[in-house]
Image 1 (cartoon, helix red, strand yellow):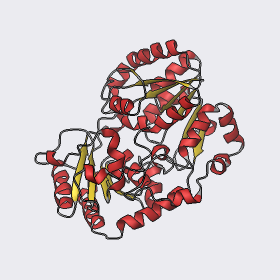
Image 2 (cartoon, helix red, strand yellow; image 1 turned 120 degrees about the vertical axis):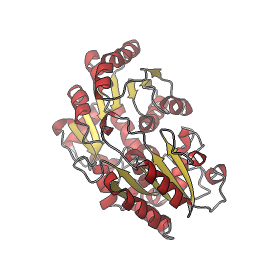
Image 3 (tube, helix red, strand yellow; image 1 turned 180 degrees about the vertical axis):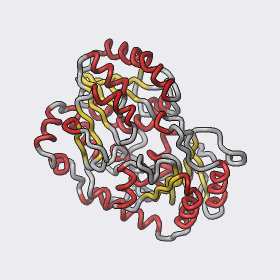
Length: 387
């Protein structure tokens, strides 16, 4: 089967990289179209995934709307030459609309309930929308749910064990604790009027955490004055190694907060979505059910920083977080295996899920011994960095 995938964000590379490698090894062929944004191209190259650029895109709602025909044309030309049987994406309007023009199915993944404008531009052209079980919207018959987070497709122990060399590469002693901080640019279409920490509080967060542990900062933009020396220097595709060994993650990135939680690293998130009507089911579930994440609205920046400082001083933090992660793994499925099964078996896989809602929970249940495995400790054999 020939499968086309559209990539619009660095996270999407991770979402689909194992699907691509697994099905490519099974004889399927892939076309990947990708937006020139952030680390997208670097990640695709790091994971040995050939791609076709669809350009840099545009910022702002009006810019994106005006750019839609041009981006669609790029995707259409590449797809027409490739002649795919199926399109797959994470809520890509470009993939969905080109699939409709080519009269082939489009499978969409989504986990962001409030991006209704984007949903209006991809859902009418999609045969199925796959979301985590805790997704707070209902799309009717088009909608299928799986018990897991998309981030688990590349961060669950079946697919990823962090490099034991990470602390050495960061210039740390073997047992030296550290925190990872992430600042966002807030330039996505759904980030309009959304903020995180102020510049003053960004500086306060890094300064006060730095009194207790080493702090490494990942950022999409220029850092405030005096903070550049703490910028994380490892390549973008190594971010999960760094995240996995950190005692604490603090940041404005919802995706990275979810990633940290899935790895068993306690996360504190602060942005304008938290606690609002636009809050995502992922964050609610990770906070209320599993206790791996705290979400603070940007109106409560001081409280977020105070909690981060209290957590970093808790000597039981890492052990407690890993126990909670074990429960999360025991209660969710092998998402990577599910994704490969669904795409390779479509449309029969969709029909099977509709006729038996518990099918995937049984078929892709994680073995208890695997769920209890602790790949986050130093000395684990790295399995996720090269593929």
